[in-house]
View 1 (tube, rainbow, N blue to C red):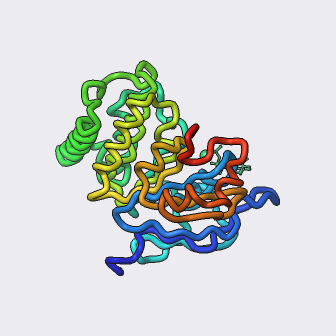
View 2: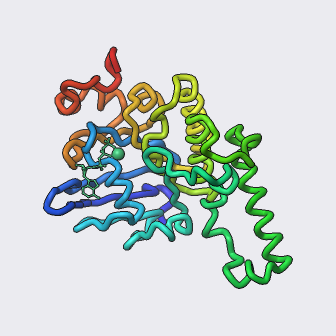
Length: 262
Ligand SMILES: Nc1ncnc2c1ncn2[C@@H]1O[C@H](COP(=O)(O)OP(=O)(O)OP(=O)(O)O)[C@@H](O)[C@H]1O
Ligand SMILES: [Mg+2]
């Protein structure tokens, strides 16, 4: 396992839905410990890229490697075992469950008791479940929402629910965290707090995020990849991407990334 190689490598990824080419020969690297942003206009294929990495959609061609090894046929249920976790665009929470229950849903691979253990409710199984709950509470505390642990998600403000979604992804202690529009719907203050949280993660966790909020992206990301109509049209540091004419054209009619009205 090359210690210096990228944590995630995407090579020549092609995805189409019923004849519509949604990703066309997409290649990118996510370096260890970095924060890589994927930006692009609506429908550019950003979420589809995440879905392909996570095994929610099957690419027609292309390859993925994670931590130096091929990531063949990734499957959503096995992701946390690989050390990958994601948040969904929107919330994707179980609104009638409590915060703690939602976060525990992110621990499936770490729950080793299985059906038999749960049925027997052995002391070992109970101890294990208690430990998972403790870990979930630790993540909630780190995100400063531990007081909400026993509240039903539906009763909480949107910004808090976004944090619950983040906590659910973090509880599996992923090496790679994929965030799909983590700042969407957040206030300015909440967005700034989120940037601080993501910066704080980078010691242990590599982050790839999709976001339309350009100030957030430009200030937080080390590198950006720009998708347009399923193709990578630019990549580089935020400053390089901001100055790229192809990016300016792709955003015609929208706020130019990092521009005065972004
Ligand atoms: N399961 C699917 N079946 C058919 N078409 C799909 C499917 N998922 C996505 N698409 C189409 O693929 C294209 C890319 O969608 P995708 O959700 O990846 O875009 P995006 O860049 O995440 O956009 P946004 O910024 O609006 O979230 C769109 O045209 C979308 O309608
Ligand atoms: Mg999307």
